[in-house]
Each structure stands twice: as structure tokens, then as C-alpha cells.
Image (cartoon, rainbow, N blue to C red; front, top):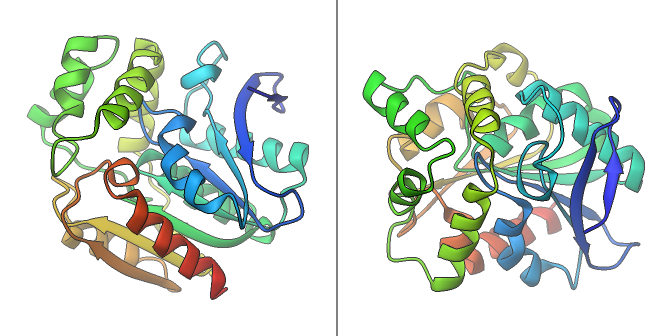
Length: 260
């Protein structure tokens, strides 16, 4: 995989598909994920768009990079990638934690973002998990058995063998300290007031079966906060929407981008 160097000298990995002269779409994965979770979407869009999927600092093939492993640092890394690949302007697509990073980046660099797609997003106000759920998430860090049990609850139906392999490999590649530090960051982010100033056209995708981040939660904490946003509830889908419903997600992204 190709790499680029961030402002603080970290070397991060990404993959790229599609024509260089086309509009760029940057994909940001979620917690304990990797750029590979976007492969089914990229396969459906790369004929028309320049698609780039980043392995966020500490995750995937970027798992040897030093910290800090925080939403703000991840957004700065996106700025470095934009400069390295000349991606301005572009559409940014973020899943879960990646959606929080996308919002932070859109606030910091509104000039670089032509559109936002937030998939099963972490809100800019964080996620107030109960102590029991918080402990469950923490117990997955660096523990493949616990991580695999958690991943099995993130889809509406039984995932395909390919999807299961991608999810498990991404989680297994995430060091425990990276998982814990980044978890503390995205659960406690607090920039909703700034998110309310985002003027970028935004598509919010809420999986109907996501728990505890239900469509109602997503509408209240994300779609109702960003003025230029539209919420679409995707039926028969859990939190790992990009792997579970790639045809539908690609269709929605394609339609959104075409209308910009």
C-alpha cells in the first residue's frame, strides 16, 4: 500500500482506485476498522470517481504509527493526506468514528470539502454509553475473542464470509492502547456547537437496526445539528452498514455526489 507522511512525521497507509482526473471521494473507517472495510463500496464507485481509503493512524497498515490517537489528530492527518494527494476539493465519507473525524475536518477545512456522507455516525457531541456498554467496548481492546463477539452484533443479518474476514482482520490489527485511547476520544468529543456551523451539503445514513445509536438518536444528535443535512434510514442494516448493504450505500453516495 502507498504511504504519506503527516505533519508530525508519522507514515500512514492508504489505497486508491479510479481515475485521477475525477472527483475525489475519501473514505474514513470506524473504530477498530481499516480502509479495507470500504472495498465493496470502492468497487462500485471507482469507475466514476477517484476513491481513496485511509488506514487511520494506529489502525490497519498504519498501526505502527505513534499517537496521539485522537479525533483532532486524525483530522489533521486528513489535511496532510489532502495536501499529499492534491484532493481539494473532495467528498468525505466517514463511518462511525470516521464520521466524527469527517465532521471535525469539515469544520477545520471547509474549503476542501464539497460534500459529507456520514454513515452510522458518531455525533460531534460524543456518545454517552452506559457504564455496562462502556465496559463492553473497552473489553474488546486487544482481545480478539471479545472483539469477534462484539463484531457479530454489528450487522442485521449474518455477514458474508468476506465481510466477516475484513471486520475481524481490522480489529485484530488494532493495538489495545490505540483502541482505548481512540475510544476515549470519540466517546467524549464535544464540538457540536461548531458542527452546527457546517454549511457543506451532508448526507446522513442511519442503519435501522443500529443499537444503541438508533435512527432517532442519529437524527437528534447529527442530522438536526448540521443545517444542510439530509437523513436516510437504511432498512435491514446494522452498524456495519458499508459491509452489510454495499449496493445501497454506493447507490446513495453516487446519487448524493451527482447532485452536488
